[in-house]
Image (cartoon, rainbow, N blue to C red; front, side, top):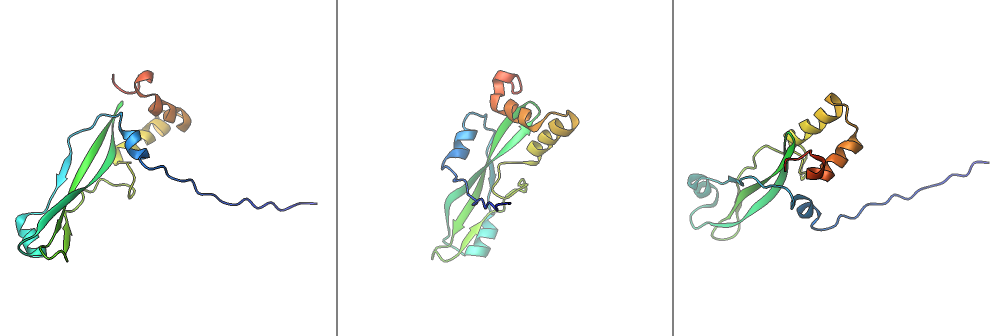
Amino acid sequence: MIDEVTVSSHKRRKHAGKREEDLSGLPHGEPVYASLSEEELLCQLGPGYRQLPDEVYKRLEFHPASFEVKEYHIGVYVSADGKKFAKARRPQTDLFRNSIATPSLLAGILNYKYVNALPIHRLAQEFQQGEASGFLPR
């Protein structure tokens, strides 16, 4: 006799601040700024606009044998009456929306996996060990 077993699905809870914690020990490169020109702002929002705090996101760049965190600042603006908003265009560096992966990081992972035949679990260990393994520069 065969019993049917149903496994309930579960969703892992994300812990706040994990991304900042993961990126805190890595070197940070120069921030990249994107903003709108004065003409674009006047055309979209009219006179009297003001700038709000920038939208900031981080992506992980991979350079052979090292990592670098790139921070992107995107200008956000609001009209004088507060009814219209404008935001500068984001640089096209995203592979996946809201992911820290960049083309250089994915290329590095694929190179280690398929060209160098390094198993994924060993690659993950190398990334976690960082300087201790000699994978990252000291």
